[in-house]
Length: 288
Image (cartoon, rainbow, N blue to C red; front, top):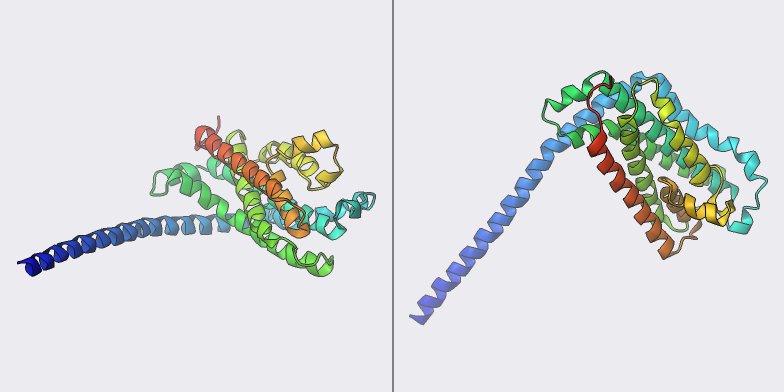
């Protein structure tokens, strides 16, 4: 009796465990199955947007050439600064400037024009009648520009290390979150700016305020170390300042843990605010 009862009880326990394991496996397979169609839709949207981007030669030239050329226009001003006193080098500052310009022109400015143009052409409205969700439409549209920005950051890092003798990054673990933060914040703010932009022609105008503020205050053209203390503290809260600080800190290794967490928190806060604002105010139909 006891032996039989024990075997029966053990069989029941094993049966329950098998059912639980099977249920967990089915849930995992269901989650993966739900991700696959979404990934296919994102890939299709990204491929279509890449084709449209390739036809816009002006946007392609701006995205590729400006981040490479503009950093060298600030070289004369940098020669006037005592960079070594702040633990910086001309190569590190130019590299950070180039990556910052990639955020602004390859991602932000390019995407503002793309979102507005697709809206005015009723592309976004037609996509909403199909399977893609609103998030998939916005993310899929942003994929080519963000991929281009990421590729530029990688090429610039390698190129500056070889040509400007910046050497290997002293804190490489800060580079990836810095670049990702810059790409995500730039894309989110591009969608937000497009919400208040009437036409594709005016997209370059509405993008200018953030471009100028970021160039001057986020440490892209002038390192934040050379700004007055109060102004520098205020500029640390600008949208792209955390990304620039993390990228520069990755090369110099001068960021403390507290400063790193502060930069990550600021970048996350800007991303949340921008995403909330886009969900609230983004326009899917042409502005009249």
